[in-house]
Amino acid sequence: MNTEDKILKDIENGYDLMADKFSGTRKHFWPGFDFILENIKNSDKVLDFGCGNGRFLEMVKDRKFEYFGVDVSQKLIDIAKEKYAKEGVSFQKISSSDILPFLDNFFNSVVSISVFHHFPFDYAQKMAKEIYRVTAPGGIIIISVWNLWQKKYWKYWLSPKALWKKDIIIPFRNNQGEIFNRFHYMFRKKELEKLFRNTGFQIEKSLVLNKKNIIIICKKI
Image (cartoon, rainbow, N blue to C red; front, top):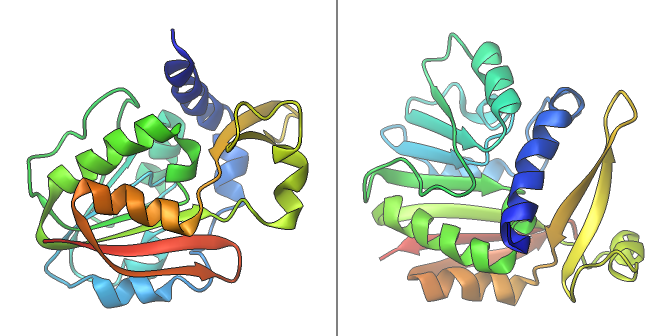
């Protein structure tokens, strides 16, 4: 197993291990992300890439569109299915090594919140291409990653455990005291823009929200 495969498998296993605490600390939608509603129409097919426990639906469950949530963690998918069983939405477990299980040009909108910073950069490029493939022409995607250049993260990228340059490990502890060492890639805003521009998207807007999140809004042309 190469380094990329190991990182991706660790992410999958780690989120299963931490699913209960992770879900318990993430019950509501992200503050300041209301702008997403401006980019989703009622008739859209929407992909929530890296949906976790499905909390994106807390913001949009009163809207009338087709929702599809995918995640590598089976336990988080199970939590989402139970929580939103009556909402008429779709949740599916995917493998980190698979292509997305959807036809070309299937979605009008794709949302991916706090996901891409967990990917090694080469894999992030592959998944950006997959998102491009499943997005319809004229479709909008919204991608956010943590701004890991904040001072509170310095101790991680100055640590001997830092894997390579922008690759860092940040631990997460579950309710039983078990530690999941989560991989993170330290994107800068221009780099995230370039990643999706090179894939074929047009960058409509980019910003750093509250110094915490780097966000880009892109259009497939």
